[in-house]
Structures are given as structure tokens and as C-alpha cells.
Image 1: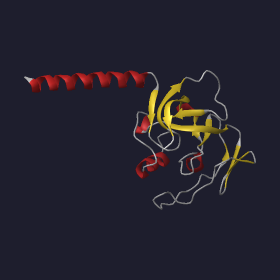
Image 2: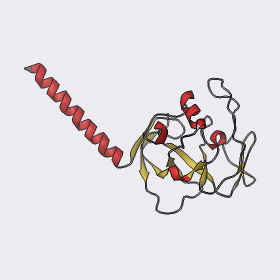
Image 3: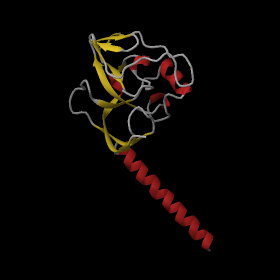
Image 4: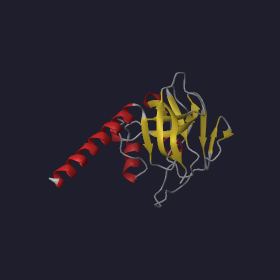
Length: 176
């Protein structure tokens, strides 16, 4: 009898926890478990205006060979975006029509981007090939993170703005 009560209690807790998680997810709440931005609970806020430089956004990466390789290398997490990827949290560094130059760091319209060193190898010693840069195409965004080891547009180039989910707002976060 006691064992049955324990099982019912645990099952009830599991149902309640699942319902809370589903409600939070549908309300735009997401956990960030990558060091590109502070770890913790974030919320996707609907964008009520055109995206702007400096906006911290959630964006689903496109399903391309570059992102499939990034997932194989462990740069991306599994999630509910197309291709099975989790959304990225990055800062918009350049918009369509802006010129991006990538050397040992990033320049946008001739101005250096702070904390934009380009690495030749990842933490496992594997070669990282930087994006060649160029003019950001229409309906694309160039994304950046100041975290030195971030996998961002320095390596994968600009991404379609059709993957934009909204602004990224920290709810309960912390720096490791």
C-alpha cells in the first residue's frame, strides 16, 4: 500500500512538472545552457519593430551543412527549430547592406567589432574556417557574441532573418 502511494505521488509530481514545463515553453521561456550568454532562464519577447543592431535575439539557425557540422562538433544543442537545433542567442551586429570584413577580427563598415577575435582552432584543436565576409544580403543578419569561443557569424556567415524568434530577455541568469 505504501509503495503504491509513493508511486502515485511521484507520478503526480511528474505530471505537474511536465505541465509547468509545457506552459513555460509555450510562454516563450527557454533555458540557456551555453556560455555564449549568461546561463539560466530566458524569455523570447515578440519583436514589435524592425530588428536593429545591438538587439539580443533568439534565432533558429537554418538547416544547412554548416550547421549540421556545427551540431556534430558540439557547438549547437538539440532543440525544436527546423533541423532539430536549439535556437541561438546572439547580438545582431550587422543588417542587410552592411559590409563585413573578417580577418583576425571582424570589421563592419570599416569599424572594428569589440571582442571579435577570429580563432583558427576550436577548444578540441579542430580547424575553424572563418566566413569570408562581404555584404550582408537582403533579409539576413550578421550575429555576434562577445564570448571568445562563441560559434557565431564569424564562422557561419549571415543567416536568414526568417529564423528570428524575437528578442532575448534574461529572466533568471548567472555568469559561471
